[in-house]
Amino acid sequence: MSERAADRARYDRATAHLDAPVAIVDLAAFDANAADLVRRAGGKPVRVASKSVRCRALLERVLAFDGFAGVMSFTLAESVWLARAGFTDVLLAYPSADRDGFAELAGDPKLAAAVTVMVDDVAQLDLIDAARASGTETIRVCLELDTSLRKFGGKLRVGALRSPLHSPERMAALARTVSARPGFRVVGIMAYEGHVAGVGDTLAGRPLRSRAIRLMQSAARKELAARRAEAVRAVRAVVPDLEFVNGGGTGSVQSTAAEDAVTEIAAGSGLYVPRLFDNYTSFTGRPAALFAQPVVRRPGVGVVTVLGGGYPASGAPGADRLPVPYLPEGLRYDPQEGPGEVQTPLLGTAADDLLIGDKVWFRHAKAGELCERFAELHLVEGDRVTATVPTYRGEGKTYL
Image 1 (cartoon, rainbow, N blue to C red):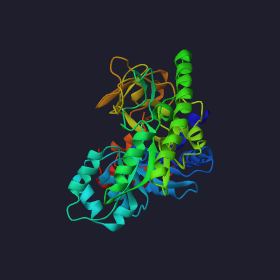
Image 2 (image 1 turned 180 degrees about the horizontal axis):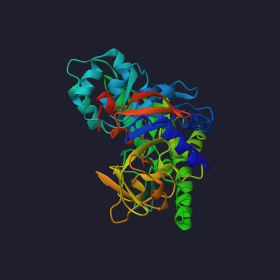
Image 3 (image 1 turned 45 degrees about the vertical axis):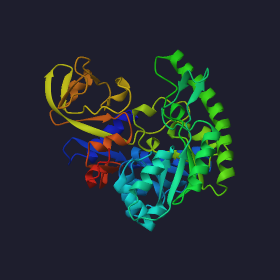
Image 4 (image 1 turned 90 degrees about the vertical axis):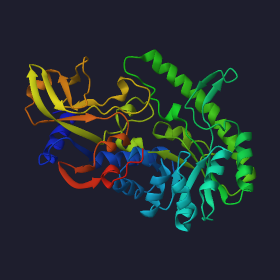
């Protein structure tokens, strides 16, 4: 029996008492992935990205590991909720326009001490000040450095359209503005190199494209390492007691951790290892989060139909944003239908061994987005479900 076939047998036994659709997390794989992230970080703390987990119990589990410290959140409302739940170090990774959230933050000393917000524009400071109401707490601020690789005078850009702060000089200028403004304190810098950390560099059947990606990423890493170090020096000249410099992501843990200027690494997708993270030469993880759909029809030889399963991921539309049938091996989508909102036909010889009610296991494309489809995750150890925990959605928290 192959390793994947053995996994299927375990998951089927563990969830035999549960009707699909159902989502699981294999704790042995989850813990092994956590340990590998810590190993790759080389002694620098790993801040867990909550958008890639979206389950409070699993955030607590990974933060209990030596080598993990702090949460990187994705909305201000989520940040406040986590802080009220006892998380003491929450870095909001994106600017916010949540006026009620800022009023709450400015009016509560516990929240203000636990949450750091992202700023890359003076207008964001103006919005926060206008939202303070009677709150007088100092707001902890992190400045985001744009990491994109720019060539030919900016005519060629590789990387996400994020912060307008690309140069060390602009970072330092904003640091001076924030430092001079009552009610704010610069405590950190973040620089997320998504074009390195979030883009696989070994694409099956596309060797030239894979080589081009590796060449681009090598150039991007070299350029960013120098510019990030300059930006940190420039900001530290304004804010000598800067608390942290955050960088990286699951796909760039080793290279980012090797930079002296970086004090901590961000990662989250590497805990679940969805399908988009199969295509990296820098690491190999174990798929830890999966979902199952039930077989509800057998339309003919070599085909079964499962309920639902059309869970596309965010990002530029493409086949790589779709879940993939994973267990049993040998199933594929009907190219005329693909994964459907209510039903999904699956083709392949493996279909002939499936009965009505059997489970087909899928891997989703992006990590935490699976949890927007399920209210709970069943935690599997060996061939047993040992706990069932709510996702954010299961706790009534749907932030985006």
